[in-house]
Length: 227
Image (cartoon, rainbow, N blue to C red):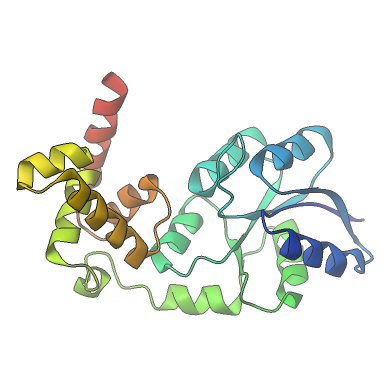
């Protein structure tokens, strides 16, 4: 029986390379290709799909990307196995992918030959981490470990903590007596060092690193909902 696959990646060369490689595999059938979440969901909604190979970072598209997209796929298409393809090297972001139930992750820096095996594992419901992903996760410090925040300056950690607790960039500036531009620069610098691409990932990092408690983030999100 063929494994029906849809592949979504916003890098045309990589997408074409995966299509070419998998087209030579007799029992893997590519039923659709997409360069954003909109195209991917359109295929999932109209075709019978067993495994979706999704790039973790696809900023364009109606359904977003990252953790939010993985949650959406699970809710909307629970029968489809999810395989994440990513260039992310931040262990905490990789751990967050696992925490939403995705246990097949392949690094874009690993040889493409791992993709075929990963698809078979996803189809069988078996976990698989490509060599680079496995190594990165093994390097992840325990929550609250000082090395997790060692690359951040004191002010960068302070900005992330207050942002995760629900303060806006402007509010943080007022509280600490620095300009909005300075706070924004420190926030972006911290995100770059940690490999965080979106504001939502700050909350997950803040909890997993012990920077804030989950209850604090929950309260800040509730406050946003009430506003």
